[in-house]
Length: 229
Ligand SMILES: [Mg+2]
Image (cartoon, rainbow, N blue to C red; front, side, top):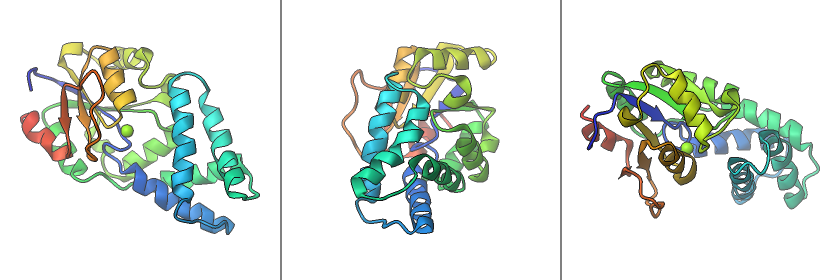
């Protein structure tokens, strides 16, 4: 790459951890436990509701508890299920924290890069869920620290999130820091908003956001030659 970096900030879900697989496994378990029907489109409906709420949260239109209080409430009403949304959400998060599928190449790439770079996780997830999944996935050991929006009180892509990271990382320099993540908004947009270079992990070949990220990769292993590891 054009610059020499010494700090790498990795997004977690969809970048290191295979959130889709974890989500599906956790959802199926908790639906089965309650005896609710879990069909082909259950997850798709849930994801539509959930991503709408997360977008509203990223845009500061709602507070995070609203996501957790309403997402299953809304799903249940769409599916005609008579259930307790907030309590189902708690069970779902517990189940989710127990799932830790990694993205292809994540272990190998983190191991190799951690020998050359100081690495941190920057994630918008729920604290206990993210901490447990990163620990049990075996990836946590490669990171000097985890920055989780719930603990910082502010989320990506907000400047304040990256501001807090920059204050907490000793010797932080914008020019020597690289963000790596899959989200066009919270990772690419967030990094650009704080004048950081960013590698966009785009495994599904979606159209690139504007302005374009510093680099785009389809597989995590592409980071190794890019970063000289
Ligand atoms: Mg992500």
